[in-house]
Image (cartoon, rainbow, N blue to C red; front, top):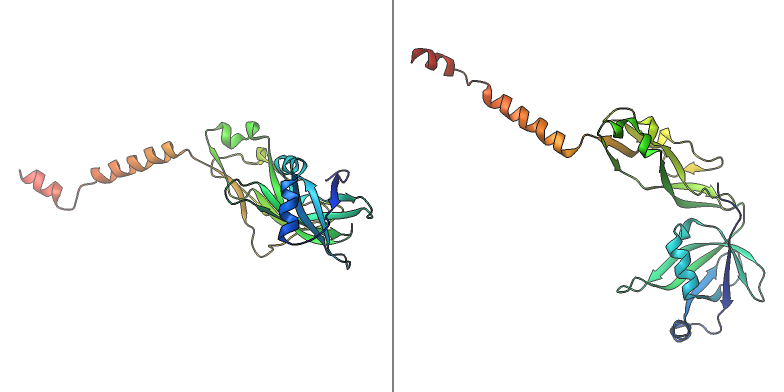
Length: 220
């Protein structure tokens, strides 16, 4: 489960609109807005390098942060959107939503595939295919799981699969999609083996005589 809530430091932004946002970017900041919680939206700036480091670390949108802004009470937030430059793919704006620890939210939680090197189906020559790398869960804001664990040692034979029902969900978490037991991953035969098998089938099919051929051969 997620550990201690990390701090996210920001500055209150004076002024709103495109002009103030452009000025923030020129100063090496990323403008953002904090909304929700039955209080007025709060415009903020976050240092570009700080935000970029957080984004590269991963799971930014599924992490609960303790937002610290000078002159404001600390508040728990979660990122709802990060806008990026269409060419450079760098952050240009972000939206943060205020949350209580008991707030229920939908989040995509990543899948952590463990013990691949010990997976019997893979050691037999099978190839793993990931169908879903994350699953949408309804979770409590104060108890967001880092990941859902898949033990690959459960896949014994080539052709075996892992579905969502094979995964133990963290306490307090619930599936958003409940109407089907969807697949997470599988281990299949290598494509080369499949191709060889298909070729053998074709050869065997070619060797089956067409009706009447045997009679013609005997007549000759």
